[in-house]
Length: 209
Image 1 (cartoon, helix red, strand yellow):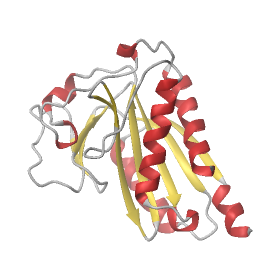
Image 2 (cartoon, rainbow, N blue to C red; image 1 turned 30 degrees about the horizontal axis):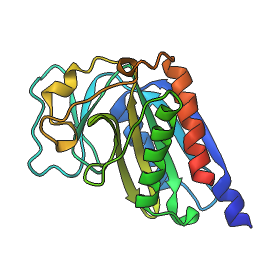
Image 3 (cartoon, rainbow, N blue to C red; image 1 turned 90 degrees about the vertical axis):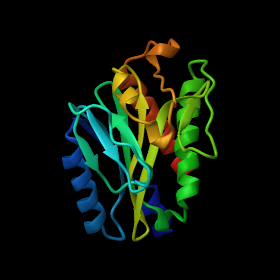
């Protein structure tokens, strides 16, 4: 009973605009220091322009522009872009306590984004060969996680109302020619804070289901 009670607890931290590398280091520290009773946490944030390159670096092409910093990080996956107008949601979870696999968590994350878009009449899908969420083959949400001692960190990003041109300088998530899109271009005229709160609610519902 105690295990179930602790696993159901979840704190939400709304961080506003944060530096990517500072936030990443804070996630590492939180995960290293957490105890068996530490509540799971969702960090909701937004980053200044930054490219991040995950651990799957084989054949990864560097950005074809030098005005945006590139950070070598420890999440799974290859290269992506974060910038203003994009929802970033980090999930700091004790998966061992939840008796949940990474694959199950990825499914929950993708399905939460798909459900969010469906609320606005947009049909989205996932792909078995490329984690994330897609609308008409254009990527709208990216996923990347790190598992350590049964606990995970990193999470997902959802393009809302941003300058998409930095994606043109990379192969998004390692896929050459992959198109990207965002909620604004799909006719979803809802503010970023509103969408962020809806996404948090859907993620929480998936995790306690």
